[in-house]
Image 1 (cartoon, rainbow, N blue to C red):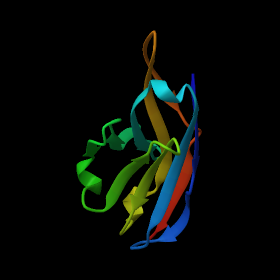
Image 2 (tube, rainbow, N blue to C red):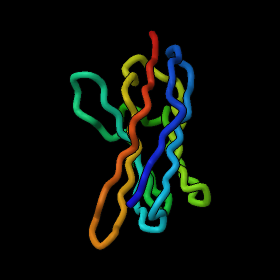
Image 3 (cartoon, rainbow, N blue to C red):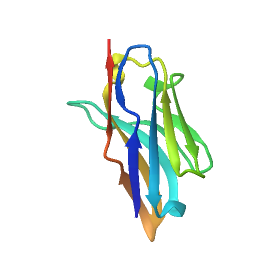
Amino acid sequence: QVQLVESGGGLVQAGESLRLSCTASGSISSINDMGWYRQSPGKERELVASITSGGRTNYADSVKGRFTISRDNAKNTVYLQMNNLKHEDTAVYYCNAVFVIFRLRTSWGQGTQVTVSS
């Protein structure tokens, strides 16, 4: 299995930056894609950004040009650099990993709160 631990959330003002980190442990070699999702009250969980094992990235339209996802395979860590934060970015951010052990599986972190005051 794969375990994920996130860190880096907090309270910031609009226009400021935060960097989230997610470190994986367990069956590291089985991990394919990793990503960040977010969920705010009353809304469904949505994809923010994802990155393949080869480094190809994908972003939600709402964060393009402001957020950057990166991956350090040597540290088993994926990052989300969030710049020019907006109030609407307020949410719980979850790290996600897609891995293969006999079949395709997914693992989630516990979530980290990001609050942006306007």
